[in-house]
Length: 554
Image 1 (cartoon, helix red, strand yellow):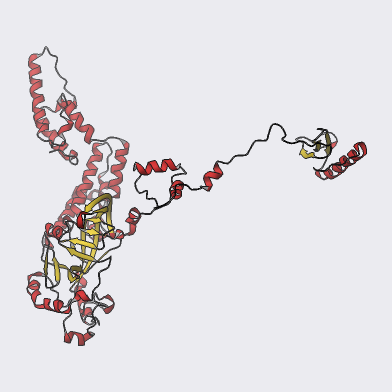
Image 2 (cartoon, rainbow, N blue to C red):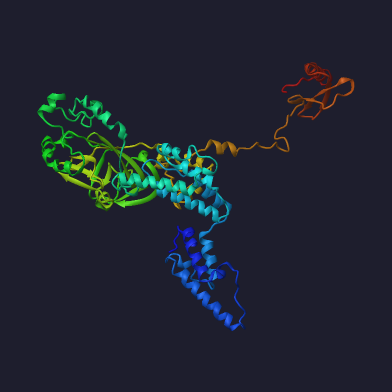
């Protein structure tokens, strides 16, 4: 039935069905309703309407039926479904094209599902009137595959020219056949369709050579020959001798680990007493970056924000110990690297919750069992197996918990989305373009913006230098003088001005002298500025000779 995601496929299936029953013309509007006086024609029309109504209604899900429940005719029903599921705007075309060109996969992803998704995007663009040529679509498929597929695709596409170039459908068929072949070779396990995947990191052609090289070197801490002392998991934890002397006295806890298959599981009980007797819980430490196996949690949890390969922000809570609400900031996918006997694996965890307050990262045993994997616990050890009975990681009982021998790959691109910082009211005032305090309080109280966190006990009264300077203005000059000299000569105002045009006899400047008491004005003209001192001396001589006084303040 029709749902929110299969409109293109559903439309391609229902259209031939309606054409076969001869009622498609009712949908596209090619045939209109007959006049009421045509009784026989109206009966045929009503019969065709009911047939088409039944065909469409029986192929709709319950959630989609609400879109056609109020439709009066079949054409209205079809138009309602098209309006909901078909988008012809340029913005929608750009969004789909952006998704088509930006889609890519990584090693371990489901290639077949990825190819089908891109094909669906191409069909949607064709329905919207935006054609993607077949050769361009083939190049898009080729560029979206991981680099590990380059050698395979080059053998098909590298030397083809002209009419011999593969079509996109032929290319998809070749890739799907190769994926199915690899899946059959791995025992029918498709890594990305499950929540947990184990993938070997070593190249098959180099396994024998690497194994022979490792046999010549042994760890001085635990005595095993699969690694060096600098990479030993028990470095700094066990102090029981080195090299051959240690191997002669006792067997390392990791040396007794099973390898793969049922044969390895049958030898498990023979070596478990070593781990139990040595008491690893007394010498190993659990830190915030440790991964613990937990049978009580229903989902995987992580407190490491920089380890998520894919991430979706969330703002929810989960119930912790004592029914306490613990905030969840996001959900995503992360990759763990595990070590077993002479083998490294990548464990892909889907739907991992990011819980910043969690003291450790937890791997959910129920979630592991739901995906078809299983765990064996006993004698202070835990062993995790995939669907093919392959040991993918091990762990040891430490302080009533099982500490797993895994580390997470770092992916820093999501850290910026997960950082939480508290700022003062002044900082938020500046970041929101200097809005008022009342506006900030309203934004915070109504939760209009997520992520606003104010420092505790921070005062609402603050001084913003930028706001103070922006609100300052020059005071206007008064219309009347606020004070006036009582005696002539007590205060004289003088100013030197430049004329816009040169006057008679080359005059270009003038200087004015105004007595503040009598308002007597004297104006002198100058050719150059350096004549101002001479004019000032003439003015003082004029006052002394004519009025027996000299200026006191200028």
